Image (tube, rainbow, N blue to C red; front, side, top):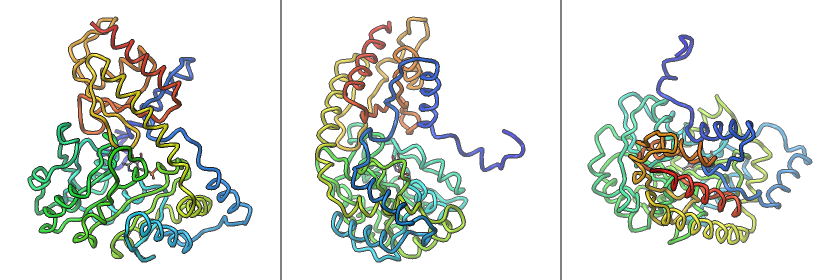
Length: 399
Ligand SMILES: Cc1ncc(COP(=O)(O)O)c(C=O)c1O
């Protein structure tokens, strides 16, 4: 590490998903026909009425600083969304908008964590949580999930992981990378454990709108006795295909929202006015486009699940939400590639498939669950079919 860098940089690495994308871009630049099943974003265009609202904001000269936490109009639209969709009543002072859900999660950790503090991170987890926790000086306590539990945190494992140092528990439903969705009853059971512990709950609901089986329950609503300790994180990146607009929002206790606002005021200030205007249109607007999106995604999920089930060495559970299949690839360990390399880890398998099939996927270790691959199926149907055929073919060449 360069001596000019802060020791802080030793606890953080580049996001592994971004790394895969960089590798793929380099391969593509060399002329290869690469297919990226590693990207955590939908291939659909942002709905037209949302884009129009952004354009209208530019034309109206809505291009100057706003309140750090977002305009009053945006916060009112977020409050309406929380009430309408989740039955949650947040006041404007309990709401903040930021530059993506990512920034809000980061600010929440930075505002509350210190050396010695612990955060319970159920695995597999979204890649950024542990690094953010470490950057804030605290320790991620990784609690491995099990496929047979639907990859969900159990009451028993939660109880065993809690210590007097625990400051937060993260609940991400639907989950990235497994697509697991917690039911109301499961959340109530976790609430019963948490009620006696003075810990905060980070409910990362960013995939709320992408549920195929069962239905979404917001932890803040399903854990009413913890409401004053739950920070609900959400945004428009996934449900409205707006990853590039960079707009996330959070609802939670006023003391915490105020602290996040202070941090944001000294770093990025308000999210883009154009994204704020577009988000009002998204949250208040017609959502019928989602039905078509979900139908398309469901058909793709079935395509992936079928391909995985018929490829020896791979297996996966059906994944109720998000747009990922989390496949076990440990059945390929010990096999040899055509050029004589033995596959021993998920990284080896992902690397082999990238080299041999020009298909990129993120290895499970990046999500704290070795022996797996995350297959993101948010790409055009025809390309997905080609990618899956290439994976099956590459695997069939192993001996
Ligand atoms: C679980 C989870 N939380 C948060 C985010 C961040 O979303 P945003 O684009 O709003 O920063 C992502 C993005 O991939 C995610 O998968």
